[in-house]
Amino acid sequence: MKLYAFYCRDGEQGEALRSRLLEDHLSHVEAHIGDYAVAGPLRQDGATVGSLLVIKAEDEVGARAIFEADPYFRAGVWQAIRADEFMAVAGDWVGGAAWKK
Image (cartoon, rainbow, N blue to C red):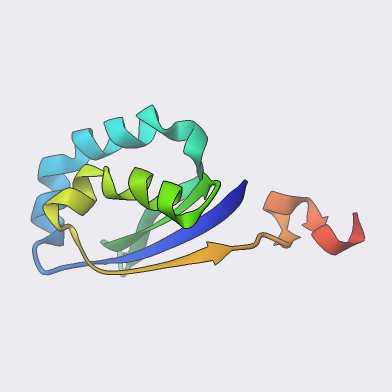
């Protein structure tokens, strides 16, 4: 299983769309909770400006299918999206330095 990081910045209507679609978005995340390594809002000066979602999948096509089914994606909450394969190799989440295991 690979990890795919989706770094998403909100568009001009992000705040209004987020508040309107929050329950639907959280229901989607909950329905796919086993597919997420981590997910949450990006904040700047107390305001939400985007999202970071790290999705577990066999390939990018599978990760994108989960991501693109999110109501926030479908409604256009995010104006700019960058997706890359992510390799977790150091830190608390991987128990230190993965190369030393």
